[in-house]
View 1 (cartoon, rainbow, N blue to C red):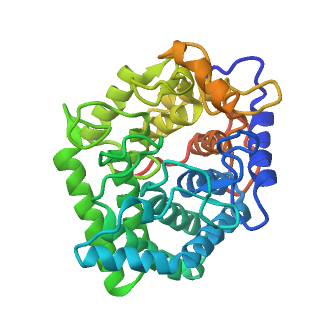
View 2 (tube, one colour):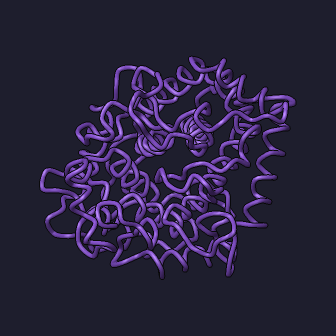
Length: 388
Protein backbone atom coordinates (compact mmCIF):
# COMPACT_ATOMS: atom_id res chain seq x y z
CA UNK A 1 0.00 0.00 0.00
CA UNK A 2 1.51 3.30 -1.10
CA UNK A 3 -0.15 6.31 0.52
CA UNK A 4 0.66 9.85 -0.56
CA UNK A 5 3.44 11.34 1.54
CA UNK A 6 1.19 14.27 2.41
CA UNK A 7 -1.29 11.97 4.20
CA UNK A 8 -0.76 11.14 7.86
CA UNK A 9 -2.78 7.93 8.04
CA UNK A 10 -3.08 7.87 11.83
CA UNK A 11 -4.19 11.49 11.88
CA UNK A 12 -6.74 10.86 9.12
CA UNK A 13 -8.24 7.85 10.88
CA UNK A 14 -8.46 9.76 14.15
CA UNK A 15 -9.95 12.71 12.29
CA UNK A 16 -12.54 10.44 10.67
CA UNK A 17 -13.69 9.18 14.06
CA UNK A 18 -13.88 12.73 15.39
CA UNK A 19 -15.78 14.04 12.37
CA UNK A 20 -18.41 11.34 12.77
CA UNK A 21 -18.84 11.53 16.53
CA UNK A 22 -18.57 15.29 16.94
CA UNK A 23 -21.12 16.06 14.21
CA UNK A 24 -23.62 13.43 15.37
CA UNK A 25 -26.81 14.93 16.78
CA UNK A 26 -27.61 14.39 20.49
CA UNK A 27 -30.47 12.06 19.50
CA UNK A 28 -28.16 9.89 17.35
CA UNK A 29 -28.86 11.23 13.85
CA UNK A 30 -25.87 11.62 11.55
CA UNK A 31 -25.83 14.60 9.18
CA UNK A 32 -24.85 13.52 5.68
CA UNK A 33 -22.68 16.63 5.39
CA UNK A 34 -22.90 19.57 7.80
CA UNK A 35 -22.36 22.37 5.31
CA UNK A 36 -23.53 21.10 1.91
CA UNK A 37 -26.66 23.03 0.99
CA UNK A 38 -28.77 20.16 -0.36
CA UNK A 39 -27.97 17.79 2.51
CA UNK A 40 -28.00 20.17 5.48
CA UNK A 41 -30.43 19.22 8.24
CA UNK A 42 -31.17 15.69 7.04
CA UNK A 43 -30.20 12.16 7.97
CA UNK A 44 -30.50 9.27 5.51
CA UNK A 45 -31.23 5.73 6.70
CA UNK A 46 -28.84 4.33 4.07
CA UNK A 47 -25.93 6.72 4.55
CA UNK A 48 -26.41 6.73 8.31
CA UNK A 49 -26.42 2.96 8.52
CA UNK A 50 -23.12 2.68 6.68
CA UNK A 51 -21.73 5.52 8.82
CA UNK A 52 -22.79 3.65 11.95
CA UNK A 53 -21.25 0.44 10.62
CA UNK A 54 -17.93 2.21 10.06
CA UNK A 55 -18.07 3.81 13.49
CA UNK A 56 -18.92 0.48 15.10
CA UNK A 57 -16.05 -1.31 13.36
CA UNK A 58 -13.68 1.43 14.54
CA UNK A 59 -14.73 1.07 18.17
CA UNK A 60 -17.27 3.89 18.42
CA UNK A 61 -19.96 1.58 19.78
CA UNK A 62 -21.93 4.25 21.64
CA UNK A 63 -22.18 6.38 18.51
CA UNK A 64 -23.50 3.49 16.44
CA UNK A 65 -25.97 2.45 19.12
CA UNK A 66 -27.29 6.00 19.32
CA UNK A 67 -27.89 6.02 15.57
CA UNK A 68 -29.87 2.78 15.69
CA UNK A 69 -31.88 4.21 18.58
CA UNK A 70 -32.65 7.15 16.27
CA UNK A 71 -33.76 4.74 13.52
CA UNK A 72 -36.07 2.98 15.96
CA UNK A 73 -37.49 6.32 17.09
CA UNK A 74 -38.20 7.39 13.51
CA UNK A 75 -39.83 4.08 12.60
CA UNK A 76 -41.98 4.27 15.72
CA UNK A 77 -43.00 7.84 14.93
CA UNK A 78 -44.24 6.74 11.51
CA UNK A 79 -45.71 3.40 12.59
CA UNK A 80 -49.25 4.24 11.46
CA UNK A 81 -47.99 5.23 8.01
CA UNK A 82 -46.16 1.89 7.76
CA UNK A 83 -49.24 -0.07 8.80
CA UNK A 84 -51.28 1.75 6.14
CA UNK A 85 -48.67 0.88 3.49
CA UNK A 86 -48.62 -2.78 4.52
CA UNK A 87 -52.40 -3.03 4.64
CA UNK A 88 -52.82 -1.42 1.22
CA UNK A 89 -50.25 -3.73 -0.34
CA UNK A 90 -51.91 -6.76 1.25
CA UNK A 91 -55.25 -5.65 -0.20
CA UNK A 92 -53.76 -5.42 -3.67
CA UNK A 93 -54.01 -1.63 -3.80
CA UNK A 94 -50.50 -0.37 -2.99
CA UNK A 95 -50.17 3.28 -2.06
CA UNK A 96 -48.53 5.71 -4.50
CA UNK A 97 -44.85 6.53 -4.20
CA UNK A 98 -45.44 9.85 -2.43
CA UNK A 99 -47.05 8.02 0.48
CA UNK A 100 -44.19 5.57 0.94
CA UNK A 101 -41.40 6.13 3.47
CA UNK A 102 -38.75 8.64 2.39
CA UNK A 103 -35.02 8.07 2.13
CA UNK A 104 -34.22 10.87 4.57
CA UNK A 105 -35.74 12.55 7.60
CA UNK A 106 -35.03 15.69 9.55
CA UNK A 107 -32.87 15.19 12.62
CA UNK A 108 -36.06 15.26 14.68
CA UNK A 109 -37.40 12.32 12.67
CA UNK A 110 -39.95 14.31 10.70
CA UNK A 111 -40.71 14.26 6.99
CA UNK A 112 -38.75 16.82 5.03
CA UNK A 113 -40.35 19.89 3.50
CA UNK A 114 -37.86 20.23 0.63
CA UNK A 115 -38.58 18.58 -2.69
CA UNK A 116 -36.48 15.43 -2.99
CA UNK A 117 -36.27 12.11 -4.80
CA UNK A 118 -37.53 10.42 -1.70
CA UNK A 119 -39.01 6.97 -2.20
CA UNK A 120 -36.11 4.58 -1.65
CA UNK A 121 -36.27 1.17 -0.02
CA UNK A 122 -32.57 0.38 0.45
CA UNK A 123 -32.08 2.28 3.71
CA UNK A 124 -34.68 0.23 5.54
CA UNK A 125 -32.87 -2.99 4.79
CA UNK A 126 -29.51 -1.40 5.52
CA UNK A 127 -30.44 -0.28 9.03
CA UNK A 128 -31.60 -3.79 9.97
CA UNK A 129 -28.36 -5.30 8.63
CA UNK A 130 -26.12 -2.70 10.29
CA UNK A 131 -27.91 -2.89 13.65
CA UNK A 132 -27.64 -6.69 13.70
CA UNK A 133 -23.94 -6.63 12.79
CA UNK A 134 -23.25 -3.92 15.36
CA UNK A 135 -24.96 -5.92 18.10
CA UNK A 136 -23.00 -9.06 17.19
CA UNK A 137 -19.69 -7.14 16.98
CA UNK A 138 -20.09 -5.63 20.45
CA UNK A 139 -22.17 -8.35 22.11
CA UNK A 140 -25.20 -6.11 22.60
CA UNK A 141 -28.85 -7.09 23.03
CA UNK A 142 -31.15 -6.33 20.11
CA UNK A 143 -34.43 -6.19 22.02
CA UNK A 144 -34.38 -2.38 22.26
CA UNK A 145 -34.93 -2.22 18.48
CA UNK A 146 -37.35 -5.14 18.17
CA UNK A 147 -40.58 -3.18 17.71
CA UNK A 148 -39.06 -0.97 15.02
CA UNK A 149 -37.47 -3.99 13.34
CA UNK A 150 -40.84 -5.76 13.16
CA UNK A 151 -42.42 -2.76 11.45
CA UNK A 152 -39.48 -2.48 9.07
CA UNK A 153 -39.60 -6.16 8.11
CA UNK A 154 -43.33 -5.90 7.41
CA UNK A 155 -42.72 -2.82 5.27
CA UNK A 156 -39.99 -4.48 3.23
CA UNK A 157 -41.89 -7.71 2.74
CA UNK A 158 -44.90 -5.74 1.49
CA UNK A 159 -43.01 -3.53 -0.94
CA UNK A 160 -39.64 -4.97 -1.99
CA UNK A 161 -40.72 -5.69 -5.58
CA UNK A 162 -41.63 -2.06 -6.31
CA UNK A 163 -39.47 0.20 -8.48
CA UNK A 164 -37.99 3.12 -6.54
CA UNK A 165 -35.11 5.57 -6.66
CA UNK A 166 -31.63 4.06 -6.34
CA UNK A 167 -28.77 4.98 -3.97
CA UNK A 168 -28.17 8.09 -6.06
CA UNK A 169 -31.79 9.31 -6.08
CA UNK A 170 -32.15 8.44 -9.75
CA UNK A 171 -34.19 6.18 -12.08
CA UNK A 172 -37.33 5.58 -10.04
CA UNK A 173 -38.73 3.55 -12.93
CA UNK A 174 -36.39 0.61 -12.24
CA UNK A 175 -35.86 -2.09 -9.64
CA UNK A 176 -32.21 -1.66 -8.62
CA UNK A 177 -29.96 -4.57 -7.74
CA UNK A 178 -28.15 -2.67 -4.98
CA UNK A 179 -31.52 -1.85 -3.43
CA UNK A 180 -32.51 -5.51 -3.56
CA UNK A 181 -29.18 -6.44 -1.98
CA UNK A 182 -29.76 -4.07 0.93
CA UNK A 183 -33.23 -5.52 1.43
CA UNK A 184 -32.02 -9.13 1.31
CA UNK A 185 -29.22 -8.38 3.78
CA UNK A 186 -31.59 -6.61 6.14
CA UNK A 187 -34.28 -9.27 6.12
CA UNK A 188 -31.77 -12.08 6.65
CA UNK A 189 -29.95 -10.19 9.43
CA UNK A 190 -33.22 -9.43 11.22
CA UNK A 191 -34.17 -13.10 11.23
CA UNK A 192 -30.69 -14.32 12.15
CA UNK A 193 -30.04 -11.87 14.98
CA UNK A 194 -33.33 -12.10 16.83
CA UNK A 195 -34.41 -8.58 15.86
CA UNK A 196 -37.58 -10.37 14.81
CA UNK A 197 -38.71 -13.79 16.03
CA UNK A 198 -41.26 -16.51 15.40
CA UNK A 199 -43.39 -16.35 12.28
CA UNK A 200 -42.05 -12.93 11.36
CA UNK A 201 -38.48 -14.27 11.42
CA UNK A 202 -39.52 -17.15 9.20
CA UNK A 203 -41.18 -14.71 6.81
CA UNK A 204 -38.08 -12.49 6.81
CA UNK A 205 -35.81 -15.40 5.99
CA UNK A 206 -38.10 -16.61 3.21
CA UNK A 207 -38.37 -13.06 1.89
CA UNK A 208 -34.60 -12.70 1.76
CA UNK A 209 -34.43 -15.88 -0.31
CA UNK A 210 -37.04 -14.56 -2.74
CA UNK A 211 -35.08 -11.33 -3.15
CA UNK A 212 -31.87 -13.26 -3.83
CA UNK A 213 -33.69 -15.40 -6.38
CA UNK A 214 -34.90 -12.26 -8.15
CA UNK A 215 -31.36 -10.89 -8.28
CA UNK A 216 -30.02 -14.10 -9.78
CA UNK A 217 -32.88 -14.41 -12.24
CA UNK A 218 -32.96 -10.84 -13.56
CA UNK A 219 -30.05 -8.90 -12.06
CA UNK A 220 -27.14 -10.73 -13.67
CA UNK A 221 -25.68 -10.31 -17.15
CA UNK A 222 -22.49 -11.75 -18.60
CA UNK A 223 -21.84 -13.35 -15.22
CA UNK A 224 -21.88 -10.12 -13.16
CA UNK A 225 -24.43 -8.16 -11.14
CA UNK A 226 -26.18 -5.33 -12.97
CA UNK A 227 -27.27 -1.80 -12.16
CA UNK A 228 -30.99 -2.66 -12.36
CA UNK A 229 -33.06 -5.62 -13.46
CA UNK A 230 -32.89 -6.27 -17.18
CA UNK A 231 -29.75 -4.31 -18.11
CA UNK A 232 -26.11 -5.26 -18.56
CA UNK A 233 -24.76 -1.98 -17.10
CA UNK A 234 -22.98 -1.88 -13.75
CA UNK A 235 -22.98 0.52 -10.81
CA UNK A 236 -20.30 1.26 -8.23
CA UNK A 237 -22.66 0.37 -5.40
CA UNK A 238 -22.83 -3.28 -6.48
CA UNK A 239 -19.63 -4.24 -4.66
CA UNK A 240 -21.50 -3.69 -1.38
CA UNK A 241 -23.47 -6.88 -2.05
CA UNK A 242 -20.20 -8.80 -1.78
CA UNK A 243 -18.94 -6.91 1.26
CA UNK A 244 -19.94 -5.72 3.72
CA UNK A 245 -23.53 -6.88 3.08
CA UNK A 246 -22.54 -10.47 2.31
CA UNK A 247 -25.44 -11.17 -0.06
CA UNK A 248 -23.06 -12.64 -2.65
CA UNK A 249 -20.35 -15.04 -1.46
CA UNK A 250 -16.99 -13.29 -2.04
CA UNK A 251 -15.31 -16.39 -3.49
CA UNK A 252 -18.13 -17.12 -5.91
CA UNK A 253 -17.93 -16.74 -9.66
CA UNK A 254 -20.63 -14.06 -9.51
CA UNK A 255 -18.55 -12.02 -7.07
CA UNK A 256 -15.39 -12.44 -9.13
CA UNK A 257 -17.12 -11.38 -12.33
CA UNK A 258 -18.73 -8.39 -10.58
CA UNK A 259 -15.41 -7.23 -9.14
CA UNK A 260 -13.82 -7.58 -12.58
CA UNK A 261 -16.61 -5.62 -14.29
CA UNK A 262 -16.47 -2.83 -11.72
CA UNK A 263 -12.68 -2.65 -11.89
CA UNK A 264 -12.63 -2.63 -15.68
CA UNK A 265 -15.57 -0.29 -16.29
CA UNK A 266 -15.64 2.05 -13.29
CA UNK A 267 -12.23 2.12 -11.58
CA UNK A 268 -9.65 4.68 -12.64
CA UNK A 269 -6.36 4.72 -10.74
CA UNK A 270 -7.99 3.47 -7.56
CA UNK A 271 -10.96 5.83 -7.72
CA UNK A 272 -14.38 4.43 -8.55
CA UNK A 273 -17.13 6.18 -10.51
CA UNK A 274 -20.80 5.69 -9.71
CA UNK A 275 -21.72 4.61 -13.27
CA UNK A 276 -20.54 5.37 -16.78
CA UNK A 277 -23.29 7.89 -17.60
CA UNK A 278 -22.81 9.92 -14.41
CA UNK A 279 -22.92 13.72 -14.81
CA UNK A 280 -23.36 14.81 -11.16
CA UNK A 281 -20.64 17.44 -10.54
CA UNK A 282 -19.13 16.25 -13.80
CA UNK A 283 -19.10 12.58 -12.84
CA UNK A 284 -16.15 12.22 -10.49
CA UNK A 285 -14.70 9.32 -8.53
CA UNK A 286 -16.04 8.61 -5.03
CA UNK A 287 -13.78 7.60 -2.10
CA UNK A 288 -16.60 5.67 -0.46
CA UNK A 289 -17.04 3.54 -3.60
CA UNK A 290 -13.32 2.79 -3.66
CA UNK A 291 -13.71 1.55 -0.10
CA UNK A 292 -16.70 -0.64 -0.99
CA UNK A 293 -14.75 -2.19 -3.84
CA UNK A 294 -11.78 -2.56 -1.49
CA UNK A 295 -13.96 -4.42 1.00
CA UNK A 296 -15.03 -6.83 -1.73
CA UNK A 297 -11.39 -7.48 -2.62
CA UNK A 298 -10.50 -7.99 1.03
CA UNK A 299 -13.39 -10.42 1.50
CA UNK A 300 -12.05 -12.48 -1.41
CA UNK A 301 -8.59 -12.58 0.17
CA UNK A 302 -6.96 -10.04 -2.17
CA UNK A 303 -5.41 -7.74 0.41
CA UNK A 304 -3.15 -6.06 -2.12
CA UNK A 305 -6.16 -5.02 -4.20
CA UNK A 306 -7.95 -3.75 -1.11
CA UNK A 307 -4.91 -1.72 0.01
CA UNK A 308 -4.52 -0.17 -3.43
CA UNK A 309 -8.10 1.13 -3.32
CA UNK A 310 -7.70 2.22 0.30
CA UNK A 311 -4.59 4.23 -0.57
CA UNK A 312 -6.46 6.15 -3.26
CA UNK A 313 -9.40 6.87 -0.94
CA UNK A 314 -7.28 8.27 1.89
CA UNK A 315 -5.29 10.26 -0.66
CA UNK A 316 -8.41 12.32 -1.42
CA UNK A 317 -8.31 13.97 2.01
CA UNK A 318 -7.98 17.75 2.10
CA UNK A 319 -5.11 19.47 3.92
CA UNK A 320 -7.30 19.60 7.05
CA UNK A 321 -8.02 15.85 6.82
CA UNK A 322 -11.57 16.05 5.50
CA UNK A 323 -12.87 13.56 2.95
CA UNK A 324 -15.13 14.69 0.09
CA UNK A 325 -18.08 13.05 -1.58
CA UNK A 326 -16.23 12.95 -4.91
CA UNK A 327 -13.10 14.44 -6.45
CA UNK A 328 -12.29 16.53 -9.49
CA UNK A 329 -9.96 15.25 -12.18
CA UNK A 330 -10.63 12.50 -14.71
CA UNK A 331 -14.29 13.53 -14.82
CA UNK A 332 -16.70 11.60 -17.01
CA UNK A 333 -18.62 14.72 -18.02
CA UNK A 334 -16.47 17.76 -17.15
CA UNK A 335 -18.78 20.09 -19.06
CA UNK A 336 -21.53 19.36 -16.48
CA UNK A 337 -19.53 20.24 -13.35
CA UNK A 338 -20.16 23.97 -13.20
CA UNK A 339 -23.93 23.71 -13.32
CA UNK A 340 -23.92 21.74 -10.07
CA UNK A 341 -21.57 24.17 -8.38
CA UNK A 342 -23.91 26.99 -9.33
CA UNK A 343 -26.89 25.01 -8.06
CA UNK A 344 -25.60 23.64 -4.75
CA UNK A 345 -22.08 25.00 -4.20
CA UNK A 346 -18.80 23.05 -3.97
CA UNK A 347 -18.74 19.25 -3.58
CA UNK A 348 -19.89 18.07 -0.13
CA UNK A 349 -16.85 18.12 2.19
CA UNK A 350 -16.75 16.53 4.65
CA UNK A 351 -19.06 13.69 3.74
CA UNK A 352 -19.51 11.52 6.83
CA UNK A 353 -20.15 8.45 4.68
CA UNK A 354 -16.69 8.85 3.09
CA UNK A 355 -15.04 9.05 6.51
CA UNK A 356 -16.99 6.01 7.69
CA UNK A 357 -16.03 3.87 4.71
CA UNK A 358 -12.35 4.70 5.18
CA UNK A 359 -12.71 3.56 8.79
CA UNK A 360 -14.58 0.42 7.74
CA UNK A 361 -11.92 -0.63 5.22
CA UNK A 362 -9.17 0.34 7.67
CA UNK A 363 -10.76 -2.01 10.21
CA UNK A 364 -10.87 -4.79 7.62
CA UNK A 365 -7.19 -4.23 6.91
CA UNK A 366 -6.31 -4.31 10.60
CA UNK A 367 -5.42 -0.61 10.77
CA UNK A 368 -8.04 0.36 13.32
CA UNK A 369 -9.54 -1.81 16.02
CA UNK A 370 -13.13 -2.50 17.03
CA UNK A 371 -12.08 -1.90 20.63
CA UNK A 372 -11.08 1.63 19.66
CA UNK A 373 -7.81 3.23 18.67
CA UNK A 374 -5.59 3.19 15.61
CA UNK A 375 -3.37 0.16 15.10
CA UNK A 376 0.19 0.55 13.85
CA UNK A 377 -0.13 0.41 10.08
CA UNK A 378 2.59 -2.21 9.83
CA UNK A 379 1.20 -4.46 12.53
CA UNK A 380 -1.87 -6.61 12.86
CA UNK A 381 -3.27 -8.81 10.16
CA UNK A 382 -6.47 -8.03 8.34
CA UNK A 383 -9.55 -9.40 10.04
CA UNK A 384 -10.82 -12.65 8.60
CA UNK A 385 -12.74 -12.14 5.38
CA UNK A 386 -16.45 -12.85 5.21
CA UNK A 387 -16.94 -16.59 4.87
CA UNK A 388 -18.21 -17.72 1.50
